[in-house]
Image 1 (cartoon, rainbow, N blue to C red):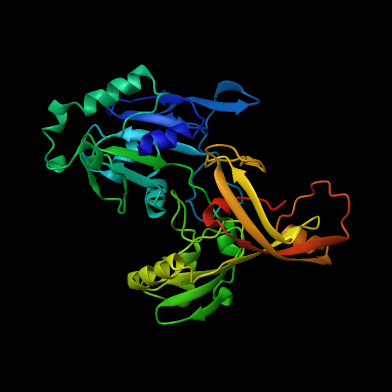
Image 2 (cartoon, rainbow, N blue to C red):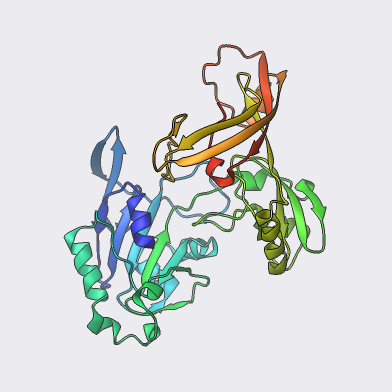
Length: 368
């Protein structure tokens, strides 16, 4: 369930709050929430110790753009609509957020809805469970024409809100990513200069490091696909066909039509597409196939073992070439955010050409 997944990975306390507008809300945040002049506790965690302090958290609002230089703390709010109406208006009342801020969140793709509230995670409080049972009781659901003919599972599927005036009826579940992940690098790039090729069916882009190919769960605005579309003056948005990591720089192919998406995916399945990576290492890496195993948990830190562990993902890469190159100068270190990890020597680095044999399971791996 979407709710279970999001709350389970947020590592945040749950707070139920309400005001005189009869708003039902579940809050999952590591930021702060303020409603109708009342300041709620701001939970923070350091070294396993959680403290709470009443702090006014929202500065004067000046829109989501321009982009901040640093990402704010994650904050996800989970709401059950108590009274139908325009979605922007409801979120503003429920979370005491400025209308322009909510409009930008919707524009970024950071607001989702489901006709029926997903089941809360095991960590939910008894009050949260009571609310869930109340709004999903069969006697209540039978009165809602919008879910007639749908199974509960189908009605719990989440979709993006696409317009500030979109109507949401009572009982609708809303998930609001109040602090979407940001990509400030997008505003520093000369995107037109990164276009390698333009064809009738596709565009090839030299993706900059520090950017997302097609966006994230809470931000589809600051993406390579969006900025490349604008740089080329296209009226139809470019579509993603494959991904490379946000921190990785290199060629990506963006489709101009849905049909070509299918064509390219077919080429990937038929192994007609090959990705080669260049990695910079502080020590020499042996040529040949390297095998290891990764813990199957999609969150940092990624744990890796050279020995087989039951249930862990099998990962394999092939080092095709490893050659000495000069150690990156200060400008390159700054440009690519290379951290000083106490390397014993900074005279020579090693550029490795790598073929990922097992594909996606490797995307957050570090070559040893």
